[in-house]
Each structure stands twice: as C-alpha cells, then as structure tokens.
Image 1 (cartoon, rainbow, N blue to C red):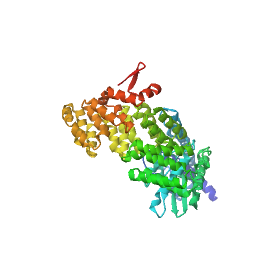
Image 2 (image 1 turned 30 degrees about the horizontal axis):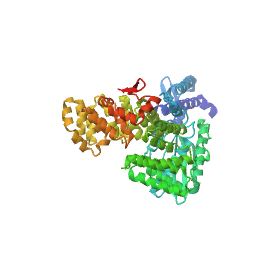
Image 3 (image 1 turned 120 degrees about the vertical axis):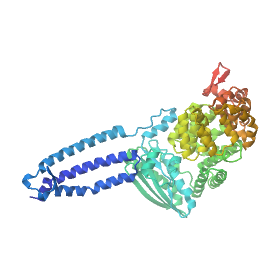
Image 4 (image 1 turned 90 degrees about the horizontal axis):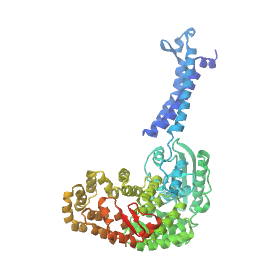
Length: 612
C-alpha cells in the first residue's frame, strides 16, 4: 500500500482539513470577541500560536492512533479487519460540513450584526452632516511621530511633521481622520495599536519616527490596519531639510494610494502642492517651533510663539500660515495674562487680515476675525465668519467648539450644545471640549450628559473648571456631598462653599448674606468670578448680582453669560432692568429679532420681550 493511500485510509487528510477549517473559524471569532471583552492583542496572538503549533501534533495523532468503540488505541495494535476508519472518515466529513456551515453563519452575523454602526446622532446643521458622514468612510489616526534626534529640543519638529500630514489627509473628504488632540493624547503611551484605534474609532493608524541632524532629516512612516495588524505601506525617507514639503507630499500620496487599494478611497485631488506653505525652510522651522510653543499655552509660551511667528514672517513676508499663527497667539493671550481682549485682538486682527489676504481659505484666521466681531457686538458678522470658516474645514473640531461657546454666551443654548456635540464627535479626547460640554449640557438641563463629561474632564486633568460648569446639574441631582468634596479638593474658600450650603439648607441664607462683603474681598478678582454673581443671586440680591455681571461686559462681552445660568436664582436676574438694558446696548435684541430668540426668552408683540 502506498504512503499516500495509507494517509488517506488513516483519515490524516480529513483531520488536517477539519483542523484547518476549525482553526480559521476560531481565529476569526477570537479576533472579533477578545477586543470587545477587553482582552489585549497578546491574547489573540497566543490563541493563534497555540492553534498553529497544534496542527502537526493533530496530524501525528491521526496517523498513530485510531478511535475505536473501546476508546483510543495505537493504530499498530488494531487488526486491519476490525478497523473502523471508514466510519470515522464519514464522521469527519460530516464534521467538516458542519464547521463550514458554522463558518458561513458566522460570516453573515459578522457582516450584518457585529459590524459597529456609524453614529446615529441626527444631524443638526449642514455642517453636522458633513462632519458625521466621515464616520462611515475609511478612517485613520496620525499618531505623533517619535523624535529620534539626539537633541530632545527637536520634539517640535517631529510633532510638526505629524500634524502637517494630518492637515493634508483631513482635506480628503472620503477619509475620516481622528483629530490632532485625540491622536496626540496617546503620545508616549505604550498601548497596543488595536486599543488606540478602537478608542479613536478608526481602522488604520499612521505612525513613524523623525531623526533630524543638522540640515538632514530621516523620516520613517508606516500605515497599519489596526484590526488585522496588517502593514498596508511603509517607507523611509532621507532628504535635505529643504525638501521637507516634498517628503510630506510624497508620504501623503502614498498613504492615500495604499488606502485606495486596501479600502477603496478614491479621492486624491486634495493632495496637490497647495500644502507647501513657504519656500523658506528656516521660516518653516520657526513656524513649527511657534506652533509647538502656542499649544503649550501659559503666558511665557504664548509670548514666545509670537516672537517665533514674527521671525518667520521676517524671513518670508508671504508666509500666510505664520500670520495665522500670530493671529491665534494674540487671540488667546488674554486668557493667560493681564492683557485685555481689546488690545490683544487689535494685534490679532491685523495678522488675521494679512493671512487671509495671502490665503483666503485659512479657517483659523477667519475664526479670529469672528471673535473680534463679537467683541464689537457685530453678532451676525461673527457667526457668518465662523460659517465661512466651517465651509472650508467642516471637520475642524476647534471651530465647532468656538462657535458653540459663542452661541452659549449669547443664550442660544440648544444651538450651542449641537455644535459642541459635533466638536466632541470629532475630538473626543479634547480636555477643553469636554469641559465646555459640561457647561452647555448643564445649561440645557441635560444633567446626565453634563455629569458624563464631568467625569471625562476629571480623567483628562481639567476637572476643576468642569466642576464649576456642572454645579447646577449636580445640585439638581442632589449630589451635595460630591459638590463639597470637590470644593475641598480644589481649596474653594469656605465663604464660597457656604453659598451652596445655603441652597441645600435655606436656614444658612442669613449667615451667607452677612458674609457677602467678605466674599467680595476673599476672591482676588471677584468681579470676574461667575460664582460670586451666583452667590449674590442665591441670597436674593438680584440687582447687585446683575450690576456685577454687566460691569464686566465692556472688558469681556462673554460676561453676559452670567445671565444664562440654569439655576432658579439666575432666572430672577433676567427680570431686571439692568439685563434688559444690557441686551439693548449690546445690540443683541436686534440680533434676536432678526435671527431668532435665545432659548429662555420670547418676544411680546413687536417691541417687547420676556425671559423665563
């Protein structure tokens, strides 16, 4: 008898086929189920390794042993006339058919049931639809490239390369790109790519490294499908620094080509040479350093970024994005220093106008002009500027965030929350977006949502401001212990805490009233603290609270937001003449009459209005 026939008689082929089919099915199930129950990639790898290792022993077992009615026996000990291998073979045939049937059923279930659906949240505006539709398209996250340079100060360069690639890819409308903030939140974290991709809700990850030495740069990049752990493309580039834009363009086109083959991304029109911002390599380096310093915030870093942007502009007076960076730096400086918004925005405006003259598509510069319009009470102009910016970059989370905050400050709470939901969808790991979500969800009485984002904000390290944003939501849910525990954690003065204790226990109201003058002295800048205004309102000093709020409007128009707080005490402030006069003086009444009233107010006839 030939060796081949003997293999067939002993069912070795059938065992091999059954084992292979069963192994494939187990691997597919493991790859789908293990990540969903929180098991790491190493668990999937271990299962695959064990199954592969077991293949040869299974064949050896089929050759050397036979299943008999009396149990498993060595094949050489069995009389050939009593062998039941034909019967065993038929059983194996049925087993193979059964496994194949289960495999087909699994494929159908995986396709029709286990695939995660796109976000079902309804579109709020045209911008919303444009942003959310990206969720159904092929998706990618650009992780911060690792700085492999000998000089740690070159961190700005590796970060800048990553961001520039992200800025190019986000222009491909058929590709969903995770936001910079969310992707960069994983910088320095040793996590499996599959976990990062799952948390960012993307299928593919671009990672790499940058080594810069003198005027030469070496960039290594690889594109990985995180679900299958399959490398779609990788390449290493070594160039003179003057060619950095060619490298970025080359990498971007290779990425889209790889995705086009693997995931049917069909658009490459966005990857033209328009992304080359300057021909001056030194100016470009200064720009990257400026952006790096600007993102670190705090006064010293922002002023340093202003210097760097100005140096870049000296080297290339036509460098539009350097002007845009300069505008952005001036616009955020008041939040981190003693400079007033009017003075700061005057510098920001000049830079933003110049940037847009050089490149009308720059969205960040247009957003700076929008903020200037709000400061001058040109409400319709400010909103129109944001809408134009969003038409250029509908998936820019910062634009949605800023517009949402502007709507919130104007009392347009529902529209504000809608914009902030889009911002969060695009950038779920952003500390400032989650912080603002606590404010706007509270203003809309969506208290569960507010507390959800309060928890996220705590995890992201911005819990202190988020707590104050969510105080009304926490009070409505009776979470007094959590409020006072937070006050203790953040070292809130006792006199401030007493304002909230008086809400829980009205018998303390007289004591708080007696402490109000002390309250005004305790806080370093009481006039700019909304919690002081709330405290005055809680104790029934409605006029005093309203006057304190209005006193800040000339310096910062967003102080009008104190009137839109969602607690019952602030409602009395909206009945004061001070509030009505402020709306008229700011031109908001004319805006409301033409563009729609805030959520808490409604018109009475043609000339009057009332707020709840």
